[in-house]
Length: 348
Image 1 (cartoon, rainbow, N blue to C red):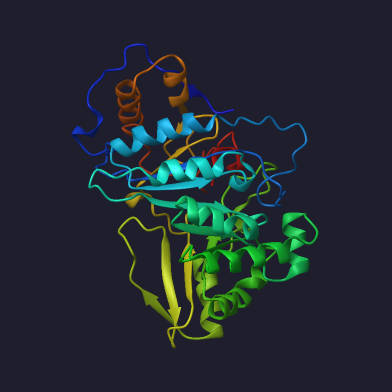
Image 2 (image 1 turned 180 degrees about the vertical axis):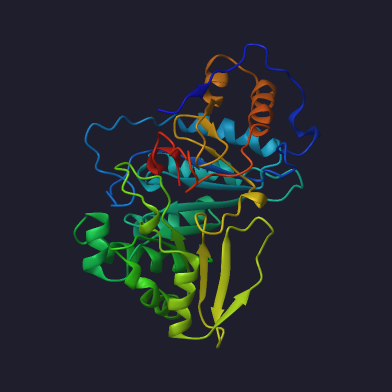
């Protein structure tokens, strides 16, 4: 467990919306990721060893709503619900409905998204859209059923996820994004098949470099399939054309093909870190703020609330925490320390 910054009894109060939420480096913090559970029905090889002995730490839905509201009053414009697997969480539709009613400081609806492994999505896509979800991302690490089952360690999983992707498209949760974590020795041969998948299914495929966030600590620099290698494989399929970013803080380098059909994003936190434009903070399923995936410290926002803190005290705690946001991560550098909690517990 990472060290947790205890709530201070002397948190300063003040109206939260008086100034935008920024860190000490001048980066505007507009993007919040909330993990609503650390439970998962998959055991992906790059993520976890299994569910044996797991201790789950889900909070009441109303508590996530309150913490999210304070963040939004500070200038958060995008919220992404993650896990674990968020579709396992009871009360998820209620949470989506409550978040969809919130407005940014500019009076606009939140950009409300969700990341799922897709296993339960076929049944949930329409209800999620009706509850107010804007967009969805599906984690899908192969377009070959046998290889997919080898990665997820759940037999028969590929067909369910493919049905979920198609259900999300029908429900209007657009643009549907499909995230593929590339792990050498498991699925680096899926780059071109995923390019074909993007073109045929009309979804955005994003390749993500493997990061040291797994439970069994199998990460090595050699296990990373980097951006240059991905681009080379895609270019061998069809000529690539670079696309402009949607926003300055966008994490993916975007490409399409020479005929404009299909879209590929490459998220390269290992070989081409994008920390300088980072706009994110994370809230774990047990209510801790993490200012970076690779933080060594967690900050107990839920503890402030649990001990009777007002919204103003929570807002001041958030501001003070964001001011401690790291300039960048140090993956691959001498002395780099992996976070003591894995991705499934931090929230994707």
